[in-house]
Length: 237
Image (cartoon, rainbow, N blue to C red; front, side):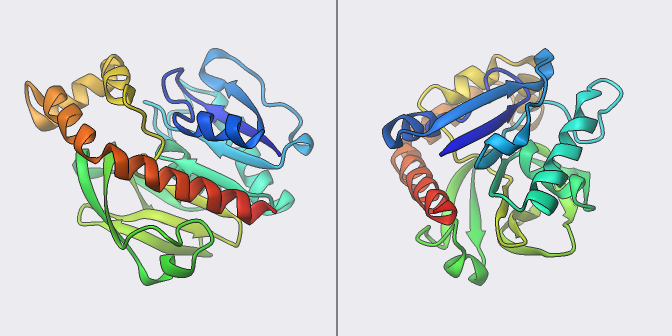
């Protein structure tokens, strides 16, 4: 298997999934779009993963590469009909590229928070086996408000209805972060935009509190990541 990964900032990589890629003998190629990397020929890849980032889907003036990225996502999902997984910004880009909309939230979600899976998630290829209610890391102030026409709702939270969705039969978007490693939160807090959002929403000292909470739930985070990874691989085979 050969996975193409779109990245938008160096610290938002596949995280723990890199370990799983290695263990499974999966080849993967990261394209750092914000650093000027070009999108390669898509024909040689079996799956496309799109990660998070500090920009928004509409920031095409400051991030003009978003235009080509969204075109590639649409082509991948609608024309090539190949497996797609988008996390955070990658979830929002999936919606935007396929005719949905994203908007700034009234209340940003930042911290270790609850997400509830829908009944549809029980039989979903990606989420089956995940508990109906889970703790997860949230770090976003924009949400999908109108999904693509053929989207199926898979998970929600009180502040964000479209926490996870399947589009068609082979494309998934997840707003919350499932790629966490032990160092993820501290690494992301080094990004000024992320640190400012954290301080604004949670107040001074929030980083330590969030790291402590994440440590309490890290076993669950890693277990859910493993389930998602194994399910994704089965969806391709």
